[in-house]
Image (tube, rainbow, N blue to C red; front, side, top):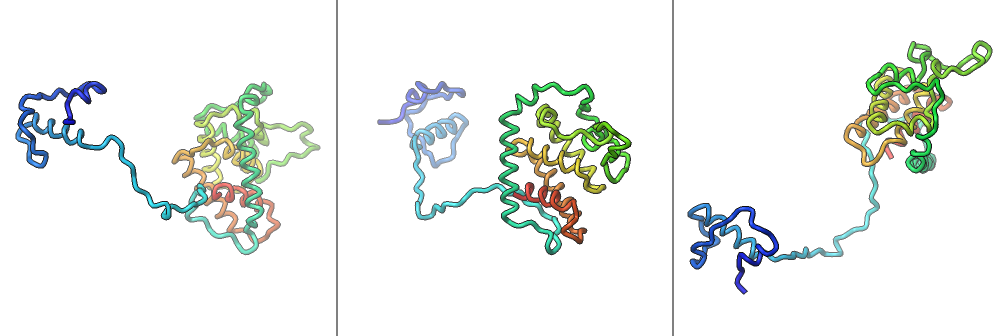
Length: 257
């Protein structure tokens, strides 16, 4: 049956009315329209000639089953010195453990965020860069001390303001994605010009575990920056006994895999 404008109009009202006068005269779809109305009529007729359903012809033999993985390219990372690179089995174990931690945080976030914090836990404002450094790393590290270890004889009670608050679940579960990204950027920027300390590793691991997928471009850039810094520091090590090595390998592994 010949196509009629009413066939389409029953399903979809016309947004741009087109005069139908002169429809009796056959239009040449290959010819140049003589006026705007004729151009619009040609568009209508061409659309009407298109099939409602189009099926692509795909050769099944050309389809290959491939395991889909998501890897973050970490360009510019120095290679590990001989003997300082972790085994493949170790890497797989760490990735599996990290995945479990991420799932657990997501599952129990509401529960942990509802826990009451101690009176001394005063979380900084989002834009308080210095406040977050002191909160996560402690005043001792931020003031330039090489270590944050406390002397039990001189300090009988652990002062988190001096040594930094650990990333307790009750704390990190309160951080939204914007805060996670900001704190991650603050700590990575601090790490760019300073040595690795245990509190830094704890917070980096916790913040990475809190990042939600799919990662934003800014997050991709941040974690690549982190991996490069870890690899750079690792490249200066001379011994497997360096206490910083396992943590650096762990962070590099999690970013790369």
